[in-house]
Image (cartoon, rainbow, N blue to C red):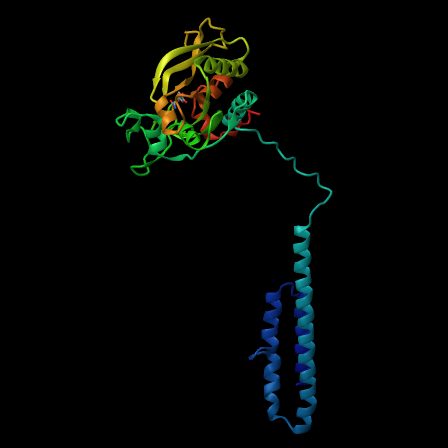
Length: 340
Ligand code: DAH
């Protein structure tokens, strides 16, 4: 028995020395100290021995068990320590490594264009305001003097949320909202997103941007409109560009016009950008219809005003020579990072 104990002890020692993993240590524990373990069976069989002998061997067996247990404990700690070392090494941070370069982002061409337009108009005294993108039929059409059967009201042109609520098709409702709450003199600029049921192609997108402008005060004339928009055109496209106003129709202005600029690419001779005409259409404008002023509670005997609406994408495309509007919504870094 004594011999057996010595053998078990040395075997356990040897095996534990070789063990490198917690699972191996556990196997060794089961093998020697488990219910059916080698040492356990010796302890069990001790009942058959003489008392004297039992006492002696019992002590030796208990010592052996304690020793194995202590070795096991030591091994476990060692293995755990090693695992920790490996983990620490793997997670170690090299503080001497040079940092990753942070790439500077660039502004989206639409943002760049809106900012440029805004700063031109701000320099003339306009202040920027905003209106909701989810708009009522009332502000988008009714308050803007659009006839009840105006084609733009059609479900095929406008995104309806319900019969009274739509995604605004233009930034013009901001005019109606501003007239309701402000008193002249009014000089506002309202950039923002608009929505129309358009199938995307090179020049159409169901979501696009406009910049709306409105001036209301005593004695405002078409001359003021022309002066402001001519200054805008020159600041935006170059001091040499000329402007021209063509009669047009919008429900909320009377008279209404579209403004063309002389082609800043060819100087008016005719090229691809101006499609040979020498002129490029850039915006809609007009003297605010008295009905619109009245709905907004403005005294039309005293006040007059003008308004304009500019398509931001169109301006960006002209200015940067972008030939497909869809490029502006794809967020391809190769395209988008060209604008600063
Ligand atoms: N809202 C018009 C459109 O989307 C653009 C426009 C034209 C706005 C004339 C105006 C304006 O304020 O006076 O086509």
